[in-house]
Length: 243
Length: 350
Image 1 (spheres, rainbow over the protein chains, first blue to last red):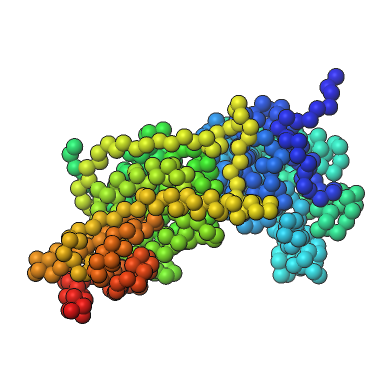
Image 2: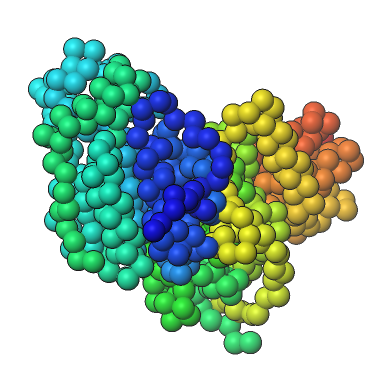
């Protein structure tokens, strides 16, 4: 029998995230995986620009801040300098797939032994809900008040599918955390994305479909339900697994 | 020790290796490719890391990541590439990371050219990125000095937990001179801030975001205090000051042409001194203040439209006259060009 415990990797500070936001669940899963893999003492995280830039308040591991979009490059430098570290990035869709797409793709192409986590909520959350590279066609944002028009802004980037074609990527999955079953699957994906680097196989990537109730202008329950709609454009699943 | 014949760029790479640089990240750009090429050959042999990045943006952020773990690390580039790195320079300074950046500068603005230019003086000494910060900036005038100052940059960077820059140009980077790659004794400093994994200690954080009341102000005051403390590293080479009525000043490779002009003038009996700032930040104000107090006037010679002249004017603070002889990029002046100007300056002062 296993008793419910609080992950040691998490500090006892309350998350600052909005009610119904999925960052808290993703944080908790990340903490559990770091603890269960026994790598807390050699973990190195990169806090990116966005809602999760305060990562260092919640994780009792070494954490460095990187400029907007450059997390995978900074993680590359840290991992290359000290290969014994278990290096991860925690980024939003704007950070990973818009301003930082070059750094993200090249780190994956090189097969960097790092784990990249992208929280995909289809908007720029921290700046107030603007168009992001994963905004759905027709989705209203503060900078597409009439909805994303594909004739103007094209179509959302499917990052997990892109990375799946890279030989340097050892594990690549898209997960959601809006049901208990999906939470369990997300944790397993995260574990494998870390094993990809721990076992020296290549780049690990997990994309979380995440609710942003405030910028979606929905309550917490409806926002969690809307994640189901996102899976039509962004199907869940493991796209590459060499772990 | 037997001297070897190397380019300035190679001397910089050798100086970095002598300092124990473990990681190099860079992106190709003329006129500094000898640095990454030498590092690509030598670093892996020594158990170090060489990585060609997908851009200067990526390179400087790899540098940020490596430096954050406490290893000696560097990047190098030339003017347009340095501009691309500028945002992360601000982060390197804010996170107080001892990282070394080399700028083998070329002509600008824009794509400009690939000839020698000193047009990046403001960019180097004023920070280039956003916010109130500085790099420690060293400027060599010979291949031997390129080797020694690069090694020294790693030591000073650790001493002050502070990014340091070598500012040189295509002229020094591309010319060959004998180098004695002597062993250098460099001090090491404790790295109780480095991110090496939270083993037997709480997790450490390197960050620059401060939103609490008064936090950012306190943070800036700490940085400024450090920049003031760095003033003790200010260095300049001063020659023939005793009888001088005019001091001719230049930095980097151009200073060699200027020194020749000063020596031509002295052979003809003109009372001319020579001042070469070795550190560009902190700027060596003292020799300028002291000469100005004696009534010595200044001629600042630069391979740009006039940048260091502002620091000379600030140092002299109105106590003496400061003239500028500017050579915007394209042509290198001959010593005679400067010699003629020296004579005119002295005649005007009578």
